[in-house]
Image (cartoon, rainbow, N blue to C red; front, top):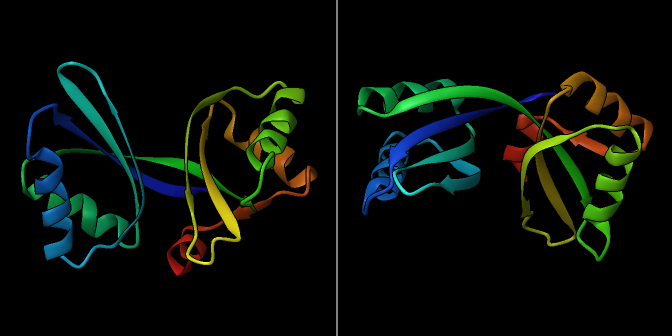
Length: 143
């Protein structure tokens, strides 16, 4: 149940995000989730898209440095404490979160939490044992 995520390294300057999103749009790649982390000089744009290989190819063709990693997508009810329950379950199992970001699906009933862990297989087992719903990339793209 791993989801492929692309990471784009970019200079921290005006217009770079617009360039990336334009390239993806012009190549019919739909962004389903994203996160931006930055420092003074550069940023990392993490994306979940419907066409991973195509996105990677067109971004590289346009001069961007692109990597691919696996993340885990967990669906929870969009209500107070939803995230806390997931994090408590992971904490009790001694699993460290490297990073995470989230989005709410169109219905507004559920949120999707995107996680990267040190121990991905252990995290999946812990989340499944905790009765949390883990989504595939196809399921995320269908939301």
